[in-house]
Length: 176
Image (cartoon, rainbow, N blue to C red; front, side, top):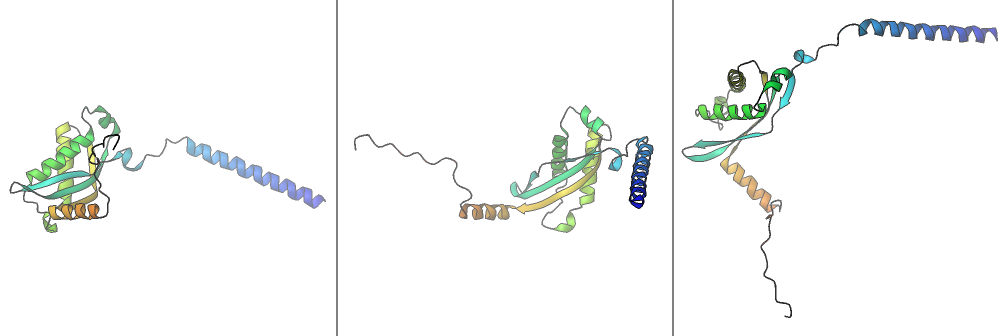
């Protein structure tokens, strides 16, 4: 019986000691400021899919599709009078139309590093501060005009694209 009492006291003492030590250790770490998030508090903002028609010889040749993620300082972002996604979209259009030598049918003419850096530098120059720290490519595609047409035909063939409004049928006179 005495063995059980001594064992119980030993368990209680060990539990109290471990609990006391845990609270002391947590309190010592709690005095430090909160750890900084990755990259010092920058926000990651994702764009919607940006679709840019590629025009060559006065005709649409295809569509450049991209989805970007960019890092911004929240304080600087709050100061903007124009939404940042609008600035990014405008810069993607400007970059693609200012560089007509890019041929999306040939992968070697597309330099993603140059594309990302150009967007970051142009937006920062336009705003006048280092708003965007990095631009990441989440998705990039090119669809030729023929691929877009083929996809539309496939959707219609599967019944996925039905007319929004059905043609009106003339009412028959009541009595016939």
